[in-house]
Length: 420
Image (tube, rainbow, N blue to C red; front, side, top):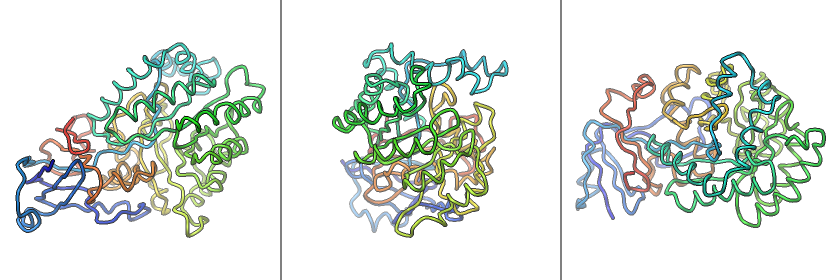
């Protein structure tokens, strides 16, 4: 099927070739005013200015969509979520209002352990249906590619149950989905004083089944004081890498404990959170110590987690000005970021982290795609990529998207050339 979308007020993110965007390049967001885009069988076949239409598309297709007054841009690429969970945790929301810290809540059996207990009791079908509903919701908000982690299982069977749900979502959904095994999210209570015992469980009992059933693309570890040390993270990641699982890691959320150095040694795809960054951490992430033949580690910023937990925001401006490659993601989860709305992520990044609208959009699209190794499929308006597109309502300018953060400015969302 061939579809022509014409009279687009502005077509955003048009790129003949793509590369991971670092530093000043992040502010470069190419676009075409008064544009068209041609889609064939769900793939971008051509695009250009309307004055080029007759030359580029001499025979118009039957299916023509008039996008008069609308901006069209690539769908969001949300590269860090915990979309599969059994129940919300609004009781902890009240605890936070009353003054309890994230660590205090975790110490009394809340946080990740709370979600793990609820997930243990949920069936695979129940988990799938609730996750499917969330996936539909975020797709209507413009997300076309998404990474989903396990990590609320913390036992062999529960972790596998989560990953099987993610695999089923992959099979049923038209969205691009990547799965991450996060068995090392925290230590279950029975292993609180026996870290090596739980690490052995991950390596010897979880990972072989994950690999055999092809349940994950990546491996993740929560590297943090009171959770997994950099050394423990390296052991777990190397075991995962022996099965072909690349690291995507929780780093520097609360403390800087050497996770950045370990992640670079592991050649991680991304390091995510980064609320607490030293000057040396930023220098390391800037790429100066990375071999020329490697792309470097992407710093994935999760501003809605900082917003919800009332933490300091990630130093986005300093990271970008230091030539780091940054992506934006929602961290959608029931405890610290109960929203998968990437529009708010983009707005918050501009409002609180001083990112330019162009930088935020690039970080939430193309760099987000790189953080899932989907850069050849999504993340930009490029011939040969999937036609995953956001159609805005009539807006005066591109900066109006993050500026008017309280309004839903999305008119329609297209996934693989079909409106959802």
